[in-house]
Image (cartoon, rainbow, N blue to C red):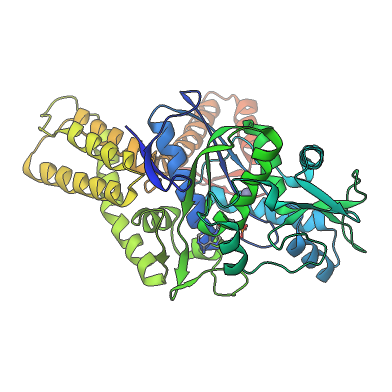
Length: 472
Ligand code: AMP
Ligand code: ZN
C-alpha cells in the first residue's frame, strides 16, 4: 500500500487515485530563459522517479509538465539580446528537452506551453472576475485574496502571518498586499495578447491553473514542484482553481527539498549554480540520479563535486555486475546449476520502502544488498546457467533501471548493435568476393558502389578487402 506525504494535510496518507488505475500528475516545469541547473534537475529527476514507481506499481500515469515560455526574465533577455522573446524561449525549451533526455527523464505526455494556452487563461480569469474574485485596475487584473476562504491552507499560514512574514511586491493598485497579478497590462516593447481587459500577458500562477485544468481536469491526483513553490505559487494556484471551478483542486501535493550549495539554496539569481549540461560532461546520468536517489526527496540536500564523484564510483559495483550478466547471457548456458537466491525478498524489500513515501535511499540500499548477495552466490558456485543471470537481470531492469534510472541495459544493446553492423559489412564483403569468383562483376560492383553511397568505402588489396567508414 503506497503512502505519501501530502503537504496539504501535513501527513502521510494512503494513496487513493480518483479513477484507478489512472493517475493524473502535474509538475511545475522550467521557465525557459537559460540552461537549467543541477538544483532544478533534482526536482525533475525525483518527480520522474515517482512517476516511474507509480507505473511500476501498475498505474497508468498521465504526466504533464508545463513550460513557462513568457515571463519577465525571458523578456529581459530578449531585450538584452535584441531577439524576439519566442526565439529565446524556443531555444531554451529545446535545450531543456535535450538535457532532460540526457538525464534519462521520461518524456511527459504533454509539455503545455503558456503561450499556447492564452485562451484558457483568459477564460479562467474571466470566470474569476465574474464570480467576484478578481478586479481590474486600468488593464491590470488582480486576484482578491481576501475573497477566498481557504487562502493559506497549503502553506499552513493565515493571511496576517503571510502579510508580515513574506516579501510581497508593493503595488499601489492592489487592494491587499497579498493580491497577485492575473493579467499584466502590456508595457512598451513587451509581447502582448488581446483580452477583455486590453492588451497584456498572463501572470505566472494563473498559467499553471489553466494548463493543469486543460489537460487533467478540475480535480486531479498529484501536483508536484520544488518546495519554494508552496508559497506563493501553489497557494495561488489553489485559490484560482478552486474559486473558478468550485471544486477541490488537487488531492496530493508533493514538494521537493532544495539542492543547496554550501548550505545556501542553489539558484540562478544567486549565481551559485552548475548547469545540468556542464555536469553531464563529467558525470553520467546514472551517477547524477544515484546521488539524488540516495537522499529522500523532501529534505534539503547539499551539493558538492566529491559527492557526485563518489556516486560515480559507487556505480561501478552495478556496472561490473551488468558486464558479467551480459557476458554470461551471451554464452546461453542452458545446463548447469541455478543457485538458490530468494529474489522475492529483494523485490518485496524494494516495494516496502518505495511504498513508504518513496524512500529512494532505502531502495538504493536494497539494490546494493542484492548486488552484494548475487556476487557472493557467483563466487560460491561454478557452472551457473543463464536462467539465473536472466532473473538477476530482470530484477535490476525493473528496479534499478526501470524505477530509479541508475542502470542502463540498453547501452549494452547499442554496442551490440554496433557489433552487428560490423558483421553485416563483413557479410557483404564476403558476398562480393563470391560474386567476383562467379564472374558476376556487375553484382560485385553494385555491392561496392551501394556501400560507398552509405559511407562505407571498400579497399581491395592483394589477398583481402578492408573498409573505411567515412562521415558525410
Ligand atoms: P524554475 O525554472 O526556476 O521555475 O524552476 C523549475 C523547478 O525547479 C521548480 O519546480 C523549482 O521549484 C525547482 N527548483 C529550483 N531551484 C531548485 C533547487 N536549488 N533545488 C531543487 N529544486 C529547485
Ligand atoms: Zn506551476
